[in-house]
Length: 400
Ligand SMILES: [Zn+2]
Image 1: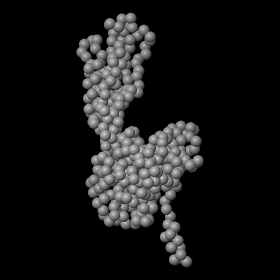
Image 2 (image 1 turned 135 degrees about the vertical axis):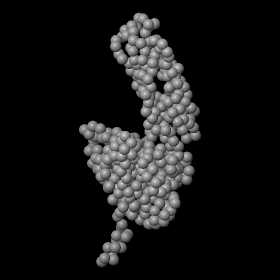
Image 3 (image 1 turned 30 degrees about the vertical axis):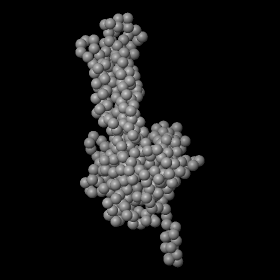
Image 4 (image 1 turned 45 degrees about the vertical axis):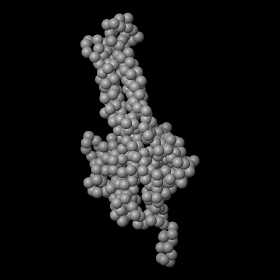
């Protein structure tokens, strides 16, 4: 009898379902920062699969405490490793009343799994755990190491997350050869797009101070709105570049313009506006800042009582980066093609991601689900696409 049970267990060994695991992860609400529950949950699963796990908690550098997880399975001490990197933190759900279902219930309806984090990016983490589980059941002693780098702080500060785990890994001699990042990379359906880099991003705010006066006497006033519009025209007319092999041309886009609204016959004292620059790998953030500052000086700067003054504020969200597509990009493309029938576009579009830290250590490719509902009310991923992403990851593991 015991023999039969053992044999039965061997044949029908429990496999981790990517759908069920996705639901379990969604049911643990995990905003950025200190959230040990979700990290401990993953640690327990990976330890049962034979991984050696470390919970890494970092804090300081003007940011909050973050729980991270490093896990490695490398039975043959191979110098080649494939890491999966991702984040368990989610953005706020917004107005719960607008959600069709509780955002932390993981409800399935009409081939869709709803919940905060469904596409960004708990289901991708579930797919990777599930594919590694399936792979190891058939290949218990692979000739490469498999690692997980999971942070609970990608959506917010990103100070005590992936960046510090990578520093810890370097100190502790955990090398990465290849890294998959499970961010949602597809605009409308699975298999369309992978990412091999991202554009850089800087947000600017410029305030022009002129000289208030009567609209009938413009010669003894200085209209900051005119100066601001002139400046914006100079900024927009300047072509930043023509694009590079893997990047679209850099772009400057205005987002806000305002002045003190004192009345229809008053020239205001101040006007201000905001814009964002998405730039490619032919610039560093500082080059863009220098260009904007130079334009400000030329158009708005000046000496004397009737010259405008300007104040420039900016925030760099990230530098542009490219992880040159090599062996991993090829394996990922072929796996993607085998499962979905599509050759994915190698793109560098979209916002920034933790791949910007990893690219200094390994070839990194981002491949995940569809990003259409990321951060939105009623975020969801399609059940068949979650199953297919698990198969893509499995196919990648088979070809490392
Ligand atoms: Zn994300």
